[in-house]
Image (spheres, rainbow, N blue to C red):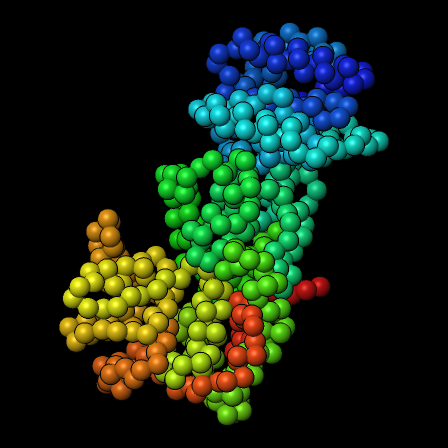
Length: 461
């Protein structure tokens, strides 16, 4: 139930809130209650069983202010049993932001400290001045207020007016530069709207460490780890078009690797990155457009697993050829990537970081002969099992693998890897020393579109 009470004057609002909070103190079986003031009126949202389609909660119906000044409820009835975690987050977020000051918050089963932090968060926000017609705006927001419609992110559109706690401002990430949307209320929102690379680097961004609701949690907290695990599993299964749709979603502001300094200081703009990438490819392939096209097409087929068994690509070159410069940005585009280590008899967890990853970078591969059979499975994209510390053997379902090396690898000309691996020889690119920043990961999809490897799936009307 969600009700609006409009007492006369500011003193009436304060008196109404005090009366409701006092009645609520003597209720011991409450499930979920939020009482907040919003300039010239009071919001009361709570869960109750209802009788004959109307509320019979004693603490509310005995309130004189509720009986006398309650506005007619124009919203359709919604059921708490249909809400998911995001819906509850939206409700709390709505009544604690944008001028709503939560005077009482109670969530059954929630930590008392968390409820107190939510109240303090709403009271410490910037004050919102009174606006003409504010009450009417609140009570006519429509059936979407209490989860009648899905959020903008889950509807895959730009969103509309009225969804309770529309979690992000309608600002779009431009050139990968982080902007300032609303504070995320849940870890699910934090991971979705402020992605880092790797995803567990979220502890380094200000949306976490300056967030009084989330920064009290340790990154090893069970709930945090489960939410992060689920997010990583979701993006692991995305293809390149899914990522393009995601980065064009309203409110998504990717950090990638720019959590220790600003995006402007770490990355070039997307357009400048695209120009530099083309300059590098033209240099490495001697301005041969056919070879560049074939290289990018092979890379795309490996990353999206378009060709059976072809699951890896190797770049062999002297130092300063731009291997890491180019492929660090490519890997960051997919957010959840791992790194293989040295494969020898002293390292039992060489392949551990590939478990659950969207792709893997293997920088300067070093292996022994008895690892060849395992490498055949990995570079061919076969499902296998790898040792993971503290977890036992974990399934590894063929993430694409990019090998970057300064030294010749015996597997490059091995017939066992002919169908599994494509190798390209690059040369030192001295002109790259003039570039003080990195390629913006968002350049990669545009590069594939420019070379007609893929067709852009985002249509701007």
